[in-house]
Image (cartoon, rainbow, N blue to C red; front, side, top):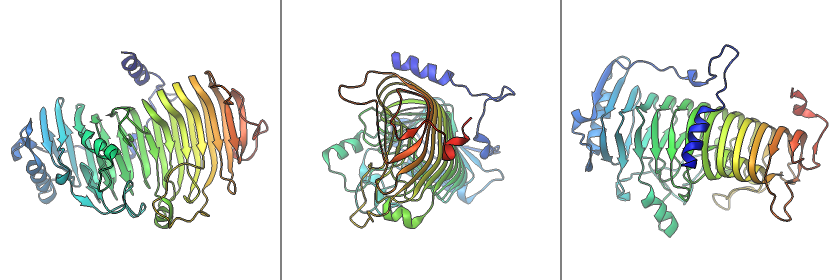
Length: 442
């Protein structure tokens, strides 16, 4: 009941409005058009009894949309019911619409999941060498695609995959729930995503992506069930959503070590606004896979409960790349192991071919207007010895809690920046004299 109350509270608070009284939103980066053509999955033999396999129905319906295009695109309607299916591919100029009470449910037979090539910016599957399982709902090279509805559900039935991970019986990297590759003009809204085998929503090499009014759920002990992971993508808007999973709620990425460096596609212009949730890991994260670079990220009006780390910016030697111009503001957190962590020693490597001298650049990180209660440790900022983190700017931060015995409230090394009205007061490496980009604060 307490978590439910907190969820309702978070979705109602921090409503950031402009001086004209309108809610501020980035969702207009993708126009929402009208679909003049409508078809139903039942017209293609879809049966929502929770037992019948509907793979053929979904594939035939999407084939019809692709090969008999209509002006303005086509809406594929999924009525109430439970539609069991194998993974399927979306096509351009379509809307997948889930009615209230509609559930698209993944089959739990792993032999039904196709294998696809690893992402070139990762060089291999994220968990294991070789390929990876295709995401449950997949889009590659598509544009003008909408996944929406009346809060219907996409259920990955991930417990099969989590158990394989725990038993170390996986042969390939687990599938994401939804993935868009090399795509643009994507809207995901008003849908519940639950029990993803791996990451939930993964736009990669994509642009103009809006994720709004979604709920993402997975058990707290489910492994690697990140909520939303923009990856080597630009112009991404994430707003007005609740996420409670077993890993980072939102994590901005851009490729893994030497493969990400070679691919060289950064994540940029990412907005995260009015997101609330709970996780044993991070609320708002950048990394740790940032080898293509991450820049121009704004996260604001964030509410976090029962967290591992509230704000986590993470990289490692061997990553290379850069993390710069990151702003996180107006964050409330309650019950967190650590409030803020900015660290250069996080994450594993794909193989022994990574270059340990490929050091990351972390510069221009601003965290402000943060309030935390029941926070065990305020923060840790640990740069890289030969590539210190610079222009780390902390303003108006109050992280209340009981520090564990013999644990200082802050630990810092290889970092420089500025702090103003931070409680408990941070480490001496953060000066009280404004300098560098921190001087721009007002």
